[in-house]
Picture 1 (cartoon, rainbow, N blue to C red):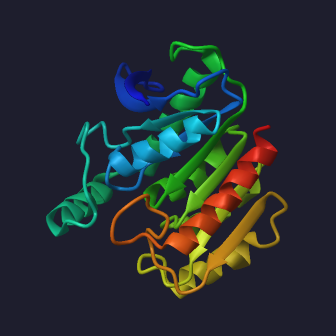
Picture 2 (cartoon, helix red, strand yellow; picture 1 turned 180 degrees about the vertical axis):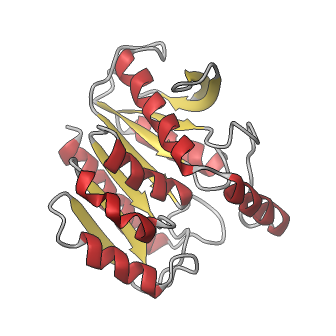
Picture 3 (cartoon, one colour; picture 1 turned 90 degrees about the vertical axis):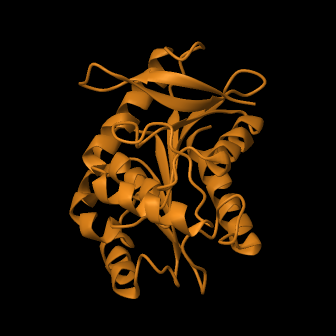
Length: 236
């Protein structure tokens, strides 16, 4: 359904790749799909395609373009999982939020070969979940969703800047976001008027992936239904 496109980097003389899926008719809004540490792989493209089928313009930026452009990894393959951890160690989240800002500009500026779209949301997974949180705090994105975001507990101090709705999905058995980190997220965000947190008992990191060993069908269906309702409300 989709094709690769190019986005002009923010404050850099460079272009970076992104997967773009268009709806059949006029887009009701746009959603930036922020990948896990595995790149714009088939699962992330599938998420874009599903959003396009629901009437959204969906775009997934290549967040590793500065040092591993075009990488696509399978988390169920141990060697590729370890490769992804290496990229995660190199990654600068400040660069990532600039790339999200660049995508927002491209969407609202109509530079992706279609009409400009004013309402822009984002949904991110793992590292992308953290970037969705940062985008909510540092950009004017319309609405944001993060799944199993890593390191959000270390950025609670930015929550005062969140002016638009943010939803976070938190699996309680997340091997990368321990109970202490989850408690810090709840303590810092439960009373925030713009933030909604959902816990998923006994589910682990990656439970909402499209395919593969990590997916939990019941949990993924519930979380995705909440995300759909959230975007239906705030991107309408």
